[in-house]
Length: 149
Figure (cartoon, rainbow, N blue to C red):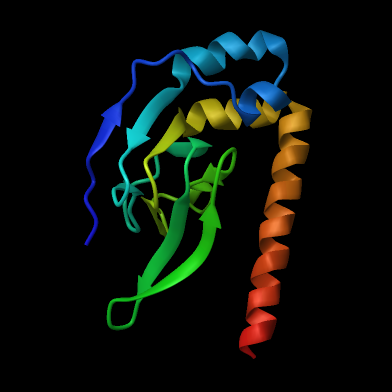
């Protein structure tokens, strides 16, 4: 259905929410452990059932987060754009419960799980940002469920 070709970028490191919400002394750790990946339109960033290795942050682009159910029907969970997090539904699990595909040529920053967990533990502003982000996601999911009933 979707191609999985990705190309690693040799562009300078991207500033993102990790830089915004983490203390300055953590920035070199972020810079040394992040990987910038350019994903062409229609290509998969990660697939449902794939092993979770980290979190993705959209630098620039648009992404569809979805899952496949029943007879190969697609259920769109959300559309994500610049600055948004991807892969968080798999955080703490071994495999992604959803897939993400680029709707346009997209640049994402990948950060490994262990580094991301360390950043959360040591940077309260990042933790608060994530709590707010997850609460908003849950609120939107509740609204969708209400509208389906």
